[in-house]
Structures are given as structure tokens and as C-alpha cells.
Image (cartoon, rainbow, N blue to C red; front, side, top):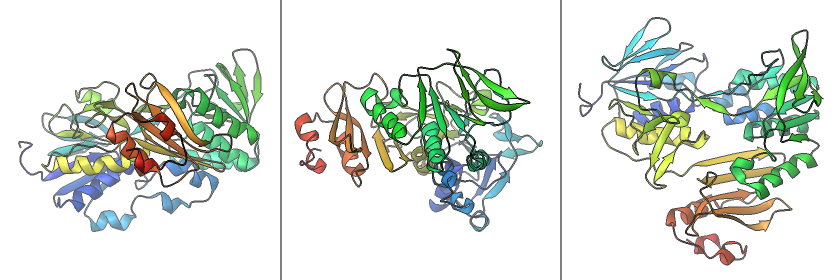
Length: 413
């Protein structure tokens, strides 16, 4: 079957947020053919950001995580193959092979396989009480550990590590964060803004070991008892949470012979090097038509929004994905949103407006031509669309006006 023909059989591999939203988008856009959603977890597709935020804190119940309830999949004729891993893709016959021996044929295939938590390769990394945070069971286990009241060591000062630390401190647990860089979030935010988050956590009683190397997770009778650093320091802890990043799940794509480079290489329409396969979410290294560069980010917003564009393209209408990268965090009384793309080396300055000391401000990353390429709002709300407009304009900004809270953002774009 040529890919110009309307598809009769669409298969989605990856039953997370991106997979569920792709199934929804296909039905919303009028596709009425066979639709199969394959996932290795037994749960209905669910959202992951609450696992380190409201769900971990006990503010959201389990059912609130689900993208759709079971009846939705039945009513929309989405065949669920849950708790069964896809092991291979036969691109010559267009079939997905499952671990139980089944083969599921496709005319179009969408890969939404997400990421896995990166693990440490140090002595003790496999001990009881060593946790990563990726699945709902991980969040449940960490919540139980927090409730026990024992000290927690968090290895990694990224978003997951800091959100988990904030949750534990708010429930009265002693927390120590161990970070290899000189500041948490340094690579993402730069020195001055990373210091804001360090100060926030220190103000709430979190201990830090910065510029630290983890040599060992110490154990007693197979149970984690703490973390030993390169300088010999021992941090006692009953639970060790490893938050050192994620690894995109590329095994299927690699074995299928798709073009890979820091993810699955996809075009502006999210189509891979195979004309019948698309990719979205964490694994997609996307040729962004607005940013005019390749972008692969492990953000919730991509999993939420990319499937709509991919579905349209799979159904025959080439639809570039043009949304800007977006993510958010909640830690203690600090809420933050970030929009745009400013990897290390891509910006010349970071400027702010508002009260940094009071943690109520905006920050802007400026490109070589003096244009805004990313923005972050901290405890300042309803400004994301204005920040997006600034970025999309691509024009140099007057820094004095940009940093003046009295000047409306909307007047700058």
C-alpha cells in the first residue's frame, strides 16, 4: 500500500500521554479505520508530571492521572494492547512484533515510546530503597518512603530531583540533594537563575552537596543506608532517589533502521526516514520550522501537542508542528513556566524584570541579534502568550523596555 493511499490500519506504539492523544486526534480528525494502541505498562495511558508534583504530594487521586477512562477507548474503537511490549518492527511487511508472539499489521505507525529513567552504575545502585521516578509505581513507592519519615538523599538537582525534594520537605522529611554541577539546574538556567532555586530549597531546609561525585550507595543487609561521595563524605539516608536524567527509548526505532541522532530524526511534519512511520514526544528529534533547528526535548507539552500534527500528517495532510517548547514546575510556593528554546551556547545574555529576591519575576534569554529566544515567568501569571509573541516576532528588543515592569510585554512584540 502506498503512503498516499488512505490508511486502514494505524498502530501506535507507546501508551502514554502522547499515544493516547494521538488516538484521540486520529478519531477527532475523522479516521474510522483500525486503531491499535500498544504499551508495556498495564495501566491505561496516564500523565507523568503529577508523579513528582500533585500526585506525589497526595493532592491528586490516581484516576485523575488517566488521559481517558476505559470507556473512552471502547466508545472510540481503540484496541488496547497493554502490558505487552513491542519487540520489533518489520518495515518490509509493515508489522509490529510483540513479546507474546503476536504481529500487528499497520499502514501507518506512530512511535511514542517515551523515555526511561537513567540509572547510576555505582556500587549499591541496585539496593532496596534506591528509587527512580518514571512510573506511577515509582511515585507510590517514594510517597511511602516519605511517609515513613526516614532521611532521603536525592542524587541529581534537575527538575525531578528538586520537585521530589520539595515534596519531601513539605512533609517534614530531612532531604539532602547531591549535584555534580556547582548549582542545581545550571545547564538549563544559567548561574543567576539557578541560584534562585538553590536559595529556595535552602530556605526550606534542604541540604546540598554541590560539585559532588557519587562513588557508592552504601547498604546494610541489602538496604540503602546512604551515599558516599568522592571526597569521602557519607550522607546517611534510608531512601536514595536517583534523578540524573532520562534516556529516550530508541531500541525499536534503531532496530527498524530509522535514522537516529539524539532521537528519531523526523521532519517538520514529524515523519521519520521511513515513509510509513512517524514519531512524537521524548524520542522525536524534530526539525522545527519556526526555530529553524532540530529540537528534542523531554517535555510534557510535546507529548500533549505533537500528536495532533502527526495525526493530520498520517491522514494525508502535511501539518508542520510549530508549537514552541514549554514546561513548568511547582516547588513549595514557587510556580514557574518556561517557553522557548535556549540551550547552552545559543544565547548571549539573560535579563530579568521584577523582584528576583522575592521570587516574582520574568527572565528572558537573548539571541545573537538581541531577540528573545526563551522566557520564564516565576510567580507571574498570564504572560506566556505575550512571551511567545516576543519569541515568534524574531525582532531585536529594547532591553531597557523589556526589563521595565511598567512596560506591557504586549507592546514589545
